[in-house]
Image (cartoon, rainbow, N blue to C red):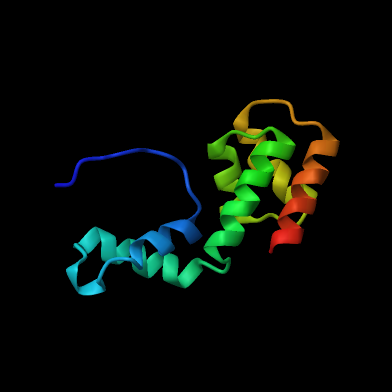
Length: 108
């Protein structure tokens, strides 16, 4: 088994990009399942996903984990966004929520 070099939250678009570097035939079962999953559900370019994540962290003061969650889900309405941010157990101002929505719409 390979050694874990680093752990960091990334979007599923970035997961697909990483898995595409390997030959599908050489993947183990879990890697193939993961590759099948991300191939079906990824609708965003990895570079756009990375840019969106970095923008959310910088402009909205989100953690890496929170930004990755937003990039994966890409909420389109304030109510949808609130349902996710409620679980973070921290107060997020309405103007910040609006900024998050603006960033996700611009990068989608």
